[in-house]
Image (cartoon, rainbow, N blue to C red):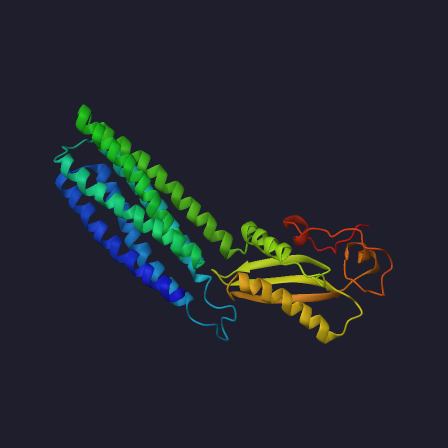
Length: 326
């Protein structure tokens, strides 16, 4: 999967360089500050593309003594750098747009510029859509970030094109600067979202979607010997997950039997996440108060009858408390 991610990132870098050249040509022939801002934003695409490529290559390296959990976290750092660069570009765009409002200059051949920018918008969207799709499939934050950036670039470019069309129709040159300002705030917001998600990964913030996914898998494949699962925690190493939790099993079984039950749990989760999981699971013996939620048959150690099974949810599975009806 990492090899595929590297190939996709190389494609993204190549496309970013080509689109940057096209936008520079469009700016030169039109003199539009709105098109200049689009070209400046593409400069970020190029820089971020190379940073992302380096990050994916580094994150694909195997674990070693210095990095026992691998190098995947570098992708979150790369995404944070990309988000920062995007935000800086947005601020530069605001400065250029305001300066052009105060000191307007002549616009030329806007029709030619519109055609070139429209082509870049189409290419951006399809490449961005492809990167997001593959990034999610390969659990690559940098591909998702890059793809999301390209798609948002498309939306803002459409707004820019509409603004330039109004310039052509009305002759009001100040619309060029207004379009650039709108464009700037859109990409600053995009940069903020990328930075926010990157910090979340770096700080090991709880990933609610992953926990919900695990809960769904566990409930769907529930084993009677998994009397209880609680205190579950997940660390995301850019698509490689470290999961720890407490598993409650019958207290009277031996170590080998407990290990076999644990294996069924890890195999179930590993199959779902395509062997991209490392586990640290603490095994507990069941308590008499849990007999009412345990539907094991032929158990001669029961202190009370089985009543019902407690369905695992996001809230109760992360709680550091054994489940029971008491």
